Length: 352
Image 1: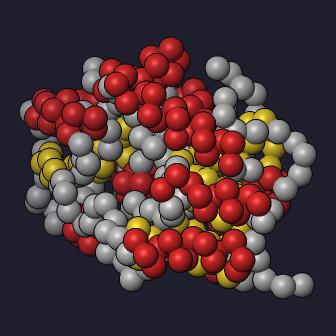
Image 2: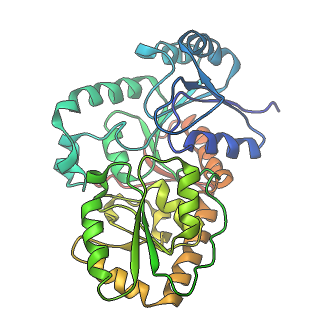
Image 3: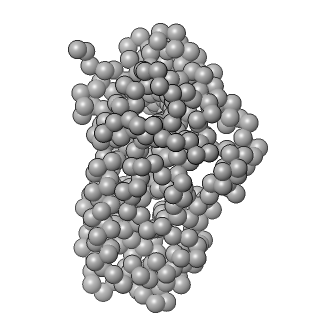
C-alpha cells in the first residue's frame, strides 16, 4: 500500500502547520509544507514560496498529493482556483480554522461567546463569504473547539473538533526557582485588549499585596523568547476573554506550569474535559493567584496534570493521529459535527 501524501499550507501561525506535518511524518505519511511568503508574525520558515512558485505548486499539488489540507481558511491561489482544481481531480480537501479566520460578530453575539464585544460587525460579510466558499469546496473543516465549530457548521457538511497540534520549540525543561525571589507570573499577549492584559495587571498587583508575586509581560516576541520566559516562570495567566485555551497555555502546561485563564465550558469538546486549567474571571483572578501562590503542592499537581494532558492530546504525533482519523472519516457519507481524537471519531450534539 502506498504512503498517504498530504500537502499542508498556505499559512503558519504558532507553528501549528509544522507540528501537524511533523506528527504525520511520524506516522509514515508523506507530509509536505508550502507557505505564503512572507508569513505573518515571527515565524521564520524555509518552506515559504513567492507568488509564481506558490501558483505552480498549487496547480501541481492535486496531481502529486492525496489530501490538500488548507490552513487558516485559505488556499494557495486567490479565488480558490486550486481548490476547484483539486475538487475536479477528486482529492480530499480539508481546511483547519483557529479563530479570527472564521469568527463573526453576529454569531458571537447571538451565542454569547466571550470575544463578542471585540468583534467588528463590518468584517462579518467578508468572513462569511470566505467560509461559505470554502464550505462549498471542501469535504470537511477542522476546528480547535466548539466555539470555532459554531461559525463553521452552517457551511460545511462535516466539522471535526480536534486537538490542535503543538510544536516542540518551547519544550525545554523549567529552571529551579531561587528561594528568595517572588513567584513569577507570565503573561504573553498577542493583543492586550483581547487578552485582557489590563485586568491581569490589576489582579497581579492586588494579589502581590498579600503574597510575593512579580508579573512578566511579553508581547511581539518569537517562541525562543517565550520558551526562555516559560523556563523562568512559576505560573501563567493566559487570557480573560477566551472560550478555550491558547497555544501559550499548552506550552505552559507542557513545561509543568499551572495555568489560569478564562474558559467558557460550552466551547469544550469532550477531550477538553481533561484540561487542568484554573478557570478565572476578572472578579476571581486575584484571589486564585493568592491561593495558588500559597499552595506549592497544588501548583505541582496542576503542572503534572497539564504536562500529561498535553502529551496525551496535543503532542504532534497524537494530534496528527486525530487528523488521520478525520481524513478517513471524511471520505464516508456521514455528515454533522464530530469530535476527532487519536482514539477515533464520534458525533457531537449541536447545541447552538
